[in-house]
Image (cartoon, rainbow, N blue to C red; front, side):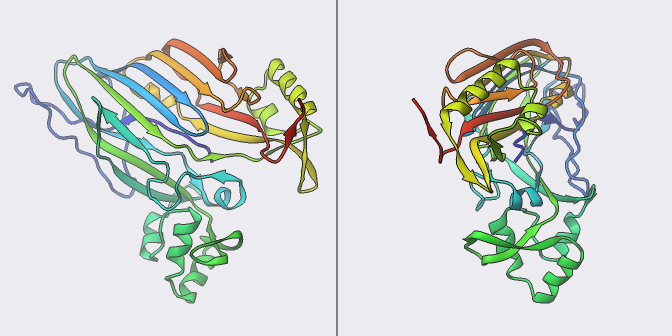
Length: 342
């Protein structure tokens, strides 16, 4: 799964000049969901982002440059998660039994902030949330909760959903707890947003620390040929990365899978950086740290300047940073079933 994270400030209410405090933010939760807007009063002083396949931590420092306190609705969307990928692509989902399946948390001043969650479904660019809910179907594309919900519907209701192209029958190995070895998968894309009200004092700083366990997707890096492999083309593999891949493949004893030699697993993570442009001015200080599990892991990315500074640590630092694109990472790891020559 393209694992992505972003922080947006939503529609800000007007403040009465005589008031020391802001009015509550007005946010519309209608058919279109939460609506983000650009803010011209709050600066992102710093963003410290640490990424691994197990955990993502982001530490933001914001400064309200205005003379007024601001109470704003802040949202944190999870990455889009589409049903076909959930069914067809190898994917590690931290906890598919929970609505907050990535265990997202946000802290301010060392205290946890209660959050709410909005879930919506999209198919071919159209919001189909209301259609699913009217049919008694969960918005979730996660296989266990989706099938547990569909199991409660009549055969006629399920056939109608199938005829509309919303669900497709599929086999499961290992079996699902809810339906066994045969059930359904969703064709739509799920979008989830966590949101909360945040106080930004006049001319003051606010620190937000967010943590979550990413849902990490990716396939297999086929041994033998580099032609057509996603990491080489899409992730701007450097000459050094190609050299390390070639050396590592020589050391790995591959396993046979789907009739091909498998040497490395692809671990894909996406982080939305461009929403940093929704605040006032650039990100004053930005640091990215990528932590790998092993010195043999290889990080591929088009992020300029990311360098390996230790056996398992990669870093890049930028000042006055205007993100022109989002961050896409591919971490290549030796397949767990392979062995490495010493």
